[in-house]
View 1 (cartoon, rainbow, N blue to C red):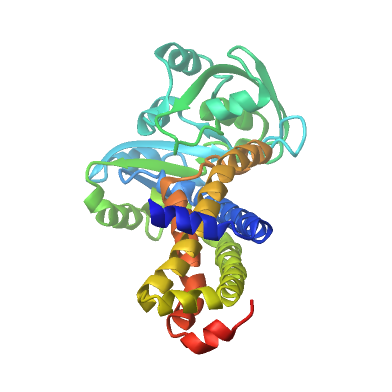
View 2: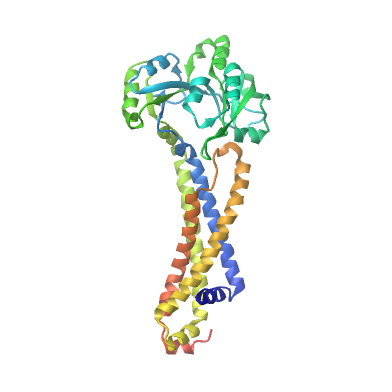
Length: 385
């Protein structure tokens, strides 16, 4: 207890300097945490993917559709338990700024493949019965203030025209990693409308979602599916849902690397600032440390004083930075809306923040502690701080 009081008094001997150093630490640790959270949000879809789902798409590009009659053939592949399909709808709600994902799906089979979408039986049945119905995630409904029964008009981009859907249900995610920012509509309704207006665009799907019985056989089942459609007019590429999500993340790889680099650069900068603070502190107390050595205190004790003071400042700044990160992340999450479907400060990020603060404290004190442990008593007592 005495040692802690001594460290506390030493740390705040120069209150302004310590306060400015801690403010820098709070800003750096908070910025580090937010940048790491942004990286985590980018990979949220990857982390939430299921090992029992495969995605089958066109081998040429995701923009090329696949025939609807592939569904029956997929069901006959050994290891496949269920098949559903989806089309990206791409409608605009009021203004282009209100972006959110919309998928036209085969509702019964699709919802069965995504048990993480927790939908009440009442809402599920209402959605299945109404071909002009829609279901949305809780986050999306809260963002726009939608309630069950509301009409949601969408201006089509890929599929021209004005489309109106009745909100029949709102799902909650099974955990915090579940995407609650999507809207699902009936693929059958979309297909019928296309057949009536543009017959050549009907009976095609964007991707097939394939349920499998054994995740360890995902690669083998994928090969079987792609072999089934080899040399056809629409060859396929089948991959795990995680690999499919990673293909989108890889498009922004340069940005992600830059964000990660900046997060570490921030820590290096505050490390330099902290090291300068501790060097100034050691220089000012040169005579005091020389006196301690004269009284018989070991060099290790002097080093411990400097390390302890540095770690105390770093830890206080790190904890404060972590606490500031949480409300800032909530504000940021609200500001970006559906841009990041899942945006939360993870336990790993908080652990990294505290670890970074402790590393800053250790490294900042290393050089002055080494110098003070080797101080010459005579020269130290002659020093005037």
